[in-house]
Image (cartoon, rainbow, N blue to C red; front, side, top):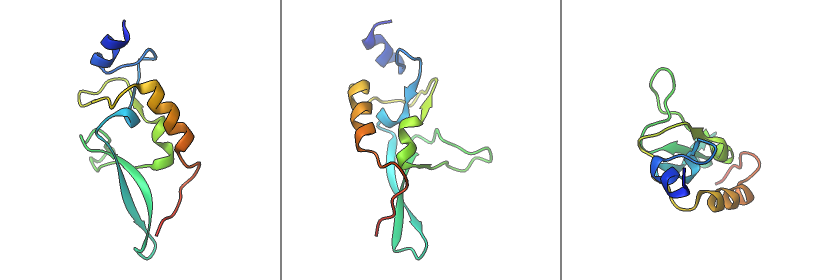
Length: 100
């Protein structure tokens, strides 16, 4: 399958869709402690990340590079996947950082 066909189908050569490269993957602050401090979390604006009971699942920002799906009807790529993911790996923190 050509690279163009893979992008149109929403998959890569590995057969996975990396959520970090999707326009629906959003960075949101999540309060900790006294509400003046926060950590960064990611969520799917299309509502594809759900817990078993139906609540929305938030993931730690530094783990976003690991989030992938075999298929997703809401996947909207933001550009060249390999280039974007390599740059993201270089810039992501290695653990949770508290801001505020």
